[in-house]
Length: 296
Image (cartoon, rainbow, N blue to C red; front, side, top):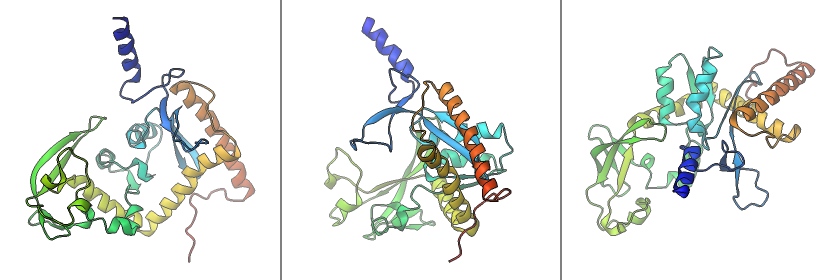
C-alpha cells in the first residue's frame, strides 16, 4: 500500500509530462544543445520563449513543455493580455494545426510561420522520396492520390485524432487497393507495423485543413515581406539567446520552480533591454525596427 501511494504521488507530480526532476519537480528532463559528453544526456530544464519587437524583449514565457508547439497558444494569450498584437512571426518549431486554428479565430493577428518541412523540401532526398504525400499527384475531382507506379490511393474514411492538449484533428484516410507485387513497396511503405510488408498496402492520413494552411503559408513567407520578417526573427529572437549565453555567460538558472525561473529570466530580460538600448544609441540606430535585406 505504501508503494502504491508513492507511485500515485509521483504520477500526480509528473502530470502530463514524461518525466520530472526530484530536486526540482517542476523541471522536465530534456536533451539540451549544450552536451559536453556528446552522449545525448538528459538534464532537468525549462522551455524559455521570448517575444521581441525592434530588438527589445517585450514578453517572456517559461514552461516545462519539451516542445514549442504546446507553448504557442499560452504565450500568445499572455502577450495579447498586455499588448494589441497585430503581427506574429514564428519559427518552424511552433507550427501546428492547433496554432493555425487559433490564429484563424483571431484574424486581427497577421501570422508568419515557417512550415516544419520548409527547409527539407529543398533537398533532393526529400523531392525523390516516393513515400511522401507531397511527391504524389493529387486529383481533386476524384479525391485520390497517384503513387510513383501509377496506382491510385482512394479515400477510405476519416479519423479524428485527439492531441495531448485536447485538440481534435480530422484526418482523411487514403489507401491503395492493390499494392501486391509492387517493386517499390519497400521504399513506399515506411511506417512500422507488426504485419508483414507483403500483406500491407500504402496508406496515407491527410489533414486537409493543415495541408491547405501550410501551402498558403509557404507562399506567404516566400514573398519579399515574408523573407524580411523571417530574417529579422532569426536576428532578433535567436540573437537574444546567443547574446545571453555567449556575452553574458548566462547558461544556467540559479533558482528552482517555474515561477522563480520566470522571475529570474524577467530580470535578465530587463538587463538585456538596457544593454540593447545602449548598443543602439552607440550605433545611432534608435528608431529602427527591422534590418533591411541585403540586395544581391
